[in-house]
Length: 497
Image 1: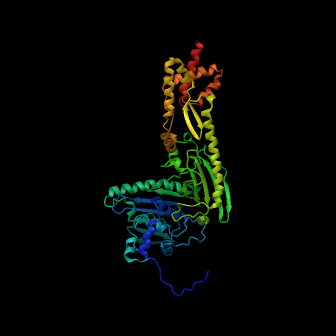
Image 2: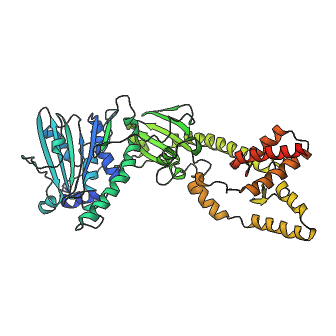
């Protein structure tokens, strides 16, 4: 390329008022904004981090207070400068930052007034970005107040540490700027939604031998482990390591327990508001901090088969450029070399899931097991049809006059043809664990037990085999205690005769 001779230059410094307003719309939500501030606290060596909110006053605020190293005034001014660090510069391993924008862009996304108060070596410093002041002056200049009296949450500072204070919460009012009660309701709802996000994103820091204590309005938050590693029924695969030029990528797969092997509270907590179908997939961590979760990076589709599958991926902060980590630390892209390895992980997960489902499906089509339904696969389609040869149907049909049998089997056929496939699919995709067999009353269950028992005994099956087969099929399986009682009574009656 030919070298161009530059004879003149012109000042292209961006207008402060315009650019600083633009920083507000990078795409933060409240939970990602607070997480970005907590990243700074962790990098500063904090062990106790408080999120404090005041939502009912005329001037609501949110404050994040830590007991980290704190900053001297010159360090604080540098931290308040947009783009205070080069994203290409090497950083220490525990450093969770990257662009030097997080403090400012995260804060401006939620408020118009950012105050940072920091204490170090016995000295307390403060700096303020007020977007209304910047709009008026159009200057890249922070305010440096001398009198800190009256600033919210400043009394929470210890010997060292930092307070990040958000005021003028114009993005959180929900349009209720003149209705204090409604405004507080909106902000409190957002804070409640943020709580789960913090428990999940920072769960590994909260689980360490010397854990970080994260408090929300004085209440200690508990870590939310998406892999349920403390549950003995969780299946944990061996950890794999992929060594690359800029560091190691660690990969580990987990299969969550069936919902019946967990408490309902734990099941719903791990699944979250969108359920387990949406929370399956890869969980990408950067320096133990969760970046992205609930996605398969386009390598497979979210499905009921993989609903309980989770894959932990750990990367160091030296790989930010390779993974295209964004400013908000909430999105990423797979490097091609890692994508190839993860394809094999997906294949292994799908193979295991299909084996499990095939085993269950075999029970349904095995004629020796006398299923109530047949699964018929032909011409690229799958149909479910009531098993008209089941003893409960066949014996009852034999008791009917010949002219009624055809009508009875027509009714059975209509039941099969009216299977609510779309509704079943929607329910299985959303809340499969809530779908249970319908209750069968005593008379219907007794009729089915007697029919199956009579047919199996005539076929010279022994009782152990009969009981094993019945216990594996509904309606007997879901009402097994009643089924056992009816079997015992039926056998006793036969013996008495």
